[in-house]
Image: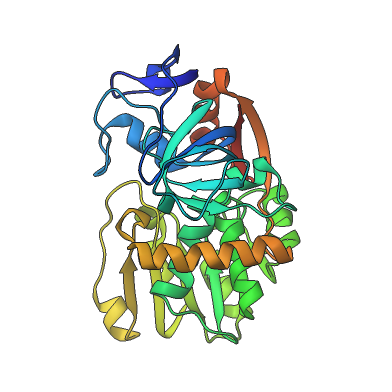
Length: 320
């Protein structure tokens, strides 16, 4: 089979398309014929080797994908050959024609969801669900601020929060991005390139501020988030690309809570809850992954450049 293989950490150019043996499954393992694979910012961080969970070399990148079950091990009970599934991790990587997964790494993909949408499910929707509900405890009637609301995680967070009955405020730097966030349920969207947007958000809430902030770029926003945060508010840091000088009194004054989270740290029980919520949301149509652009497997290098360098507008996928 064809697969992207990384033999050394570095820039996107270290990714090579190679012919490798097709994995065989046994025990609790499932072999999935990949139709589409999701490209996430975390894939690019892992590729550089500086991420805390950087895989051992050589490896095939990718954790998110969707496809059809090709074969199952003799201990598998939840899936059968021919099932439509999405992956929530992989033993062998998903930038490939086939991927070997454990049974617990898969979720059923409803018939009304495309494979491209399925490839954009796990990392964005699991990350945002965990941030909003399992960390921040967001409740109906509260107000959530979603930074980067036009990106994959941002759109997912907007949809989750809106479906839960929260008022949703987003930020995005382009007019197209702001419109996309509104189309997905945001009540108001502000330009985060505008230096005054934190004050504008607070004014929009009538001076109260927001109850929950999903923070995608903490090294840029964290200190200023408190300008828009309500008393007893919660901030969940899901993205960061550097260091920051921070004034702890900001958190003290508002009796605020700052959560850090990584989806890598979630338990299987936590993941099972998320899988159930995702299936229900996809089946009902309340969750609608937005695929902004598609690349072939041979174009994985270009996809990695795009996910970091371009303005995020939904999800980037590889079609296999």
